[in-house]
Image 1 (cartoon, rainbow, N blue to C red):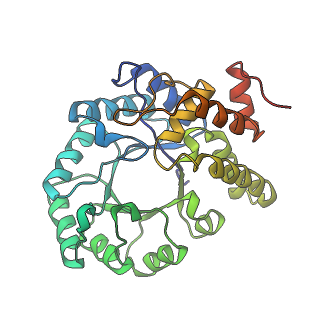
Image 2: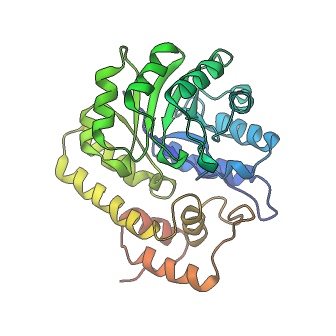
Length: 311
């Protein structure tokens, strides 16, 4: 049975620290929807603005809340060097996560690793890190390694148990499947396709599930049961939601806006500085557009929060 995942936000308190109770409540919604969690990342998780102690606490809360119920993975912040990545990995391993997601080398300031440099980087990291690893390919690094290079990294490092692909054409997944010489997991971002990657055996993950986890689960359940008309309806709801939120995305801003509007667990804290929540007028306009989507899960959350849902 495949796991499916949410690329999770981190929940902060109004004072700016981690919100323990709010984060547990937030994760409880993922558990209720039977979705595994990717904890952290520099995007949805805002982890580049967190200290090592805060990262450890965040992972620990996630493990305590989710272990034995849904899969708990750490999506480590991307780094420039093997030593920095190893330090990040140790924080997550010590907290008890099941697997580590490691990005390719950070590509800021025009740095783009050669094939040899990228292979050597993973060799250096995984000569030290003794834990299940999923290699993460994402264009936000500033480049996309060739599928053959990722396959070679996987071949050289038996600790790699999967590859996670964000914003890639589906042929990239097929090329990896054709080239990798052993069975691994393939994690695929919902926004880059849905039914085709499922048919190819991929595990889906969705940022949208931060707010509408039951809709994501509904799509998965219908698709796995072959109820494609119903799966298509759920997928259409997710796509309409995505069209709205991406006016404020990507990353955590739209998540925190939805949390505040819908009074979801941990909503009081908002974004971590230097980033700020939008002005009240913008929030009101977004709230009106969100509620006018008239999607069942959003309507149910809004009713529970005592909000007036437009007719």
